[in-house]
View 1 (cartoon, one colour):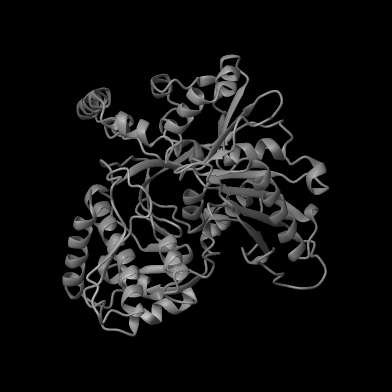
View 2 (cartoon, rainbow, N blue to C red):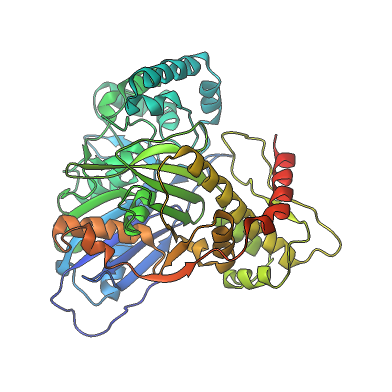
Length: 517
């Protein structure tokens, strides 16, 4: 069902519009934007994940395709427009979810394997403990020390994760004979969600990805291309990878049979990088905080790479012409899904009431919530838990403990960023569903002692994809023009001293330690 309505009535105006589609982990959304980046119409459909075996998470490619086409048609109709008025289509996608298919027939060898999938967990743990990986770390650490060249920095911290594509793609060629046989005959195509959608939209005539999506797979060397050394180590044929294009780029047009007219495809971008572009984090030191299903801190590091063992990793933000922007990312699991779980067990009815529930009491009475619903690469035995429960504990205390855990983890990751990324940090710009929670936003601002801005529209991945498409199509001229289109709904400034939170945070950190292993 559409979850957006037309935001202005009347006949279709002769203006130009761009579409921003966000294919996320929980929903596919499309927004129609006009020249001032106002939403004229929107639609969304829920993404249904498949769980064929314990730990496996997949998406049906045909269902996803149907949802993708459906939300575009619904959003354009909701805006009261015709597809011929669309100047460009921008596509933002969840990262590291991938599929392989036969080059000649277009038939997939398997469902999409989600970034949340854990089938490669044993392989990941084995590699991370291996002597070979330790040798790689030593070699590249020495090369970085001797040369000062940043291209050696990322390999010196190389650690595999179940979220990355690399190990799961290696699993495919070890366990799906049809894919392996096709790869040996140069007939196998690999693609993340953006690549596959582009392939389908153009009826197989265009096969490509962009730099932001490629860098998020864990197989792409940020300064060059697909990593031949790593691919060889993991037995992944180099022939399966798509060409890598600019993020804001004319990728071609949709086949006219799909929408009745050909629509230019003007950007492909990974979701977190897209949200960063939508927040106009264009300068080194600009910070974006997304709090959705998971939490992501992204820092624009300009032309430099910054990484640290376990906590932060470098990615390509976007490439437009000669400009390549690098970002550093830190992530947290179990943000929105922990709040959703609390709703499912009836701790509250409407998520909008949680901030007031938390503020209705002075503190959590020592109750702590430790999130751990997803397997951690650092500690697969971490368990989710409530600690400090008492006879007087109420729903309000439990809800406050959950929200506090989000703010405490924001503080931990922010401190890591300050320590590791040697760039003065600017105002933090927040988006994602949990950014609508004023309690979490204010507490995070207090803890990091930094101003946090929240935009009027928190669907930043859609807006970022639209901005990139609009630049490529000529709807907007440059990034300076985009900055003027930003709309800030709320600003949270520090109101309490960090020391007021110290006892509660110390208690929470002790609870985390007790949940480890």
